[in-house]
Amino acid sequence: MEFQDVVRKRKMVRTFEDRPIDPAVLERIIANAQRAPSAGYSQGWAFLVLSGKDETERYWSTTMTPERRTEFGWPGMFNAAAIIVCLSNKQQYLRRYALADKGWRKALTEDPHLRAGLNVCAGEVTCEPVAAAHGLPYRPAETMLG
Image (tube, rainbow, N blue to C red; front, side, top):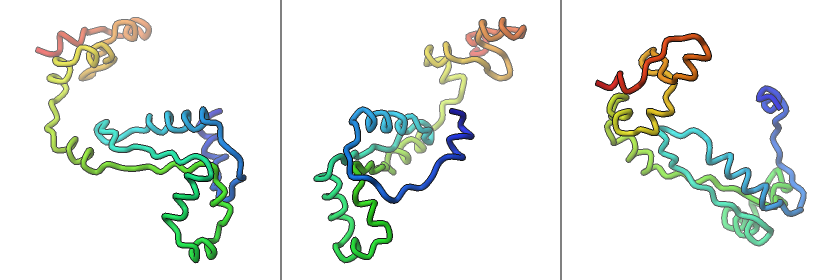
């Protein structure tokens, strides 16, 4: 499915059926969420997965008083078989941005894996197969680090 189709077909769901969710589906959802971009690759988040009536009911009873639940506009939400709570870690982001950036030369010098995965650097094609496939001049990244 194309991304445009996904965006066009998305919808807000506020009523759920009371049926279990396959744990493999929950694992896939979390695996996809963990691939989301984060500031400076700091990954300052974690996910709390509440699955099954006991865990979801504990969440709802902790976050909403019985009176509020009675007045709540979407009572079908309380039927959800799972709740995924996104937890953020502000300190992780603050620590990441307290570090000075090394600059691209130092990062490439210190990390051969980063250097090996580099396709273009400072306007030069540094991946030989990419250069060859597109008929472009190739320059090894190592020659740019001096």
